[in-house]
Image 1 (spheres, rainbow, N blue to C red):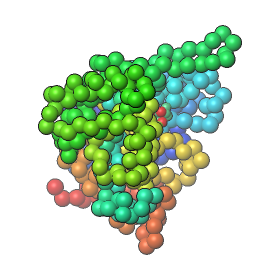
Image 2: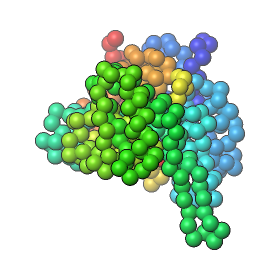
Image 3: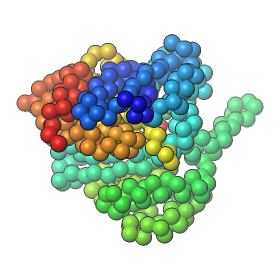
Image 4: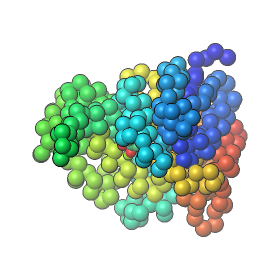
Length: 361
Ligand code: IPM
Ligand code: MG
C-alpha cells in the first residue's frame, strides 16, 4: 500500500530501543485496525550512531529522515559519550541538528494529569483539584541554544548569545494561538522582559500576532513568576508559549508536577506536517535492558504523530484511550501503587496494543 506514511524510527540510547519497540507495536496495531499503511524504517542515532557508524547523527540516518514523513525518536545520551568532543556528543551532535535541519521550531509539550495517577504528583491534593491540563509551546530552533558562541583566546570567558528575531517569535506565537483555539482559548506568554531586550521584542511581537487572534485571551508572565505559578496554581494555564531556554526549564517542571515523567509525550513541528515525536524523559542508561522502563510516553508520542503528521484523530484517540484503560490496573515500576499489577516494559506495550485492537469505534 503506497500511502506515503513512512516513519523513521530512531531508537537511540539507553532505554530508547525498548520503549520505541513498544510504541512501534502500538502504532502497528492502529495501522492494522484502520488500514492506514504505516511503514517503519530503523536507523541509529546518538551514542548508538557513534558506536555503529562513527557519528551521533550518521549521514544515512539523516537521509532516512529526509525520505520519511515523520520521526519517532526514543532518547539520546550515554555516559560513555562524555569522552567525545562537546560538538560531537549526542545532544549537540544529533538532537539539536535534527531540530534545526528540519526547522522544527515548535515543541509541543502537554502537561496533563492522569486521573488514575493523581497521587503520584508531588503537589498537594487541594492544588490539583480535579486535575490540570496545559501545554507548553516551546520555541525550539532559536535563542541561546543556537546563538553565536564565543570565547577569548585564553579561554577565560565564554558566551552564548540570546537572540530572537520578529519572524521567529511571530511563527511560534501563531502556533500557540492556533493551539489555544482548539482548547480553552488562553495563551500565557512567558519572558523576562523586565531585564532582557530579546524578551522585550518577544513580548511586542506576541502582541502583534495577537491582533489576528482577538478571540483568544493573552497574558504575559515573567519566567520566574511562571516557575512559581506552575506549582502554586497549575490550573490557571491552558497554553504557555515561551523561548527555547525558558521552555526547556519550565517543561521539565511542568512534567514533574503531573507525577508521571514516564507518561508525557512531545511533538516538534515546523510549518508542514513533518514532525519529530519523542518522550519528554531522557535515555535513563541505568535502567536500560532491564524491562522496567515505562514505554507510555513514547506510545503517546505515537498518538501525537497520528494527530499532527497524519491527521488520523481516531487512531490518536485509540492510543490515548487504550493507555488510560490499561493503567487503571497495570503499572510499570515508576507509577506503581498498591493494589495494581506490576508489569514490565514489554508487557505494558503488549497490553496497550491489545486494547487498541479491542476498543470499539
Ligand atoms: C529537552 C532536552 C534537550 C534540550 C537536551 C537533551 C539537549 O533537555 O528536549 O528538553 O535542552 O532541549
Ligand atoms: Mg529539557
